[in-house]
Length: 327
Ligand SMILES: NC(=O)c1ccc[n+]([C@@H]2O[C@H](COP(=O)([O-])OP(=O)(O)OC[C@H]3O[C@@H](n4cnc5c(N)ncnc54)[C@H](OP(=O)(O)O)[C@@H]3O)[C@@H](O)[C@H]2O)c1
Image (cartoon, rainbow, N blue to C red):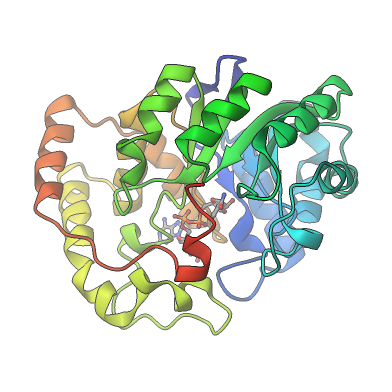
């Protein structure tokens, strides 16, 4: 698979990474450990070298699975994980205090079965801890060799600028896809100016852009999408217009809708590295195929024009979670 570079410091990764969250957290019942490890290893065999996890996925179990899966080829892969919640539990409040960050790094290193974390993201900006203090703490961890690079997730432009002065930010991980294009307004220009890579999460629109979800889909009780306004039954129905567009482009290109969603992201900037997640081998293979699809300037312009006529309805987060983003 094509390689891409994140940030001025040059973190070399496969053009598509693997988002590992859904194997343990967020989308219903966790995948059985053996199967999850096999899926992660299959991704590596197919050319993926960039793996995304967080202490709060599980919590903790996802890092353990990622660590065990990647241990045999640790030096050949880039592992990204995240800190930022009280006790590592995303249902509790935020905690990016220096003491907490230092405790997380030790625990994450153990669970990941490694002595360095390639990319350590702050998961959400903590309004109670100045970002300079957070960046300074990660800088110390970098000097100690425990962390290689610093990242932010869902941070606003001011925070990105302030953090970058203290410790260069290699990547921002935030939601970006055909289903959510807000970062194009302010975020992407700032990343371009500062030379920071962009790692779009939920690049398949949490599965919606693949065409596998419609208004009749029933999610498991513990599935996060049950509380997302954009995924209410009526909004899924209304937003199907977008899926129809993606499907029609896919059929013209003899590709799958998921592949078009990923190829579109890859075509936006050469320093964008999406991290689709799946629990299924055949979908992993399909998604990886998206990296080989080229969308021409004309095709991209046509997509842009068509998108102008599509209104996407429903917020991407319920109110209490919306308050944690864009700070
Ligand atoms: N920083 C943050 O705050 C944050 C937030 C959310 C996610 N993330 C990261 O980003 C990664 C990806 O995001 P995401 O998992 O939310 O969303 P996503 O990658 O957009 O979509 C994942 C969903 O799509 C389904 N899917 C995947 N490939 C498919 C295909 N080819 N055809 C049909 N369905 C397909 C998956 O179901 P199956 O498993 O059934 O295939 C899963 O339900 C996560 O794993 C996590 O590492 C970070």
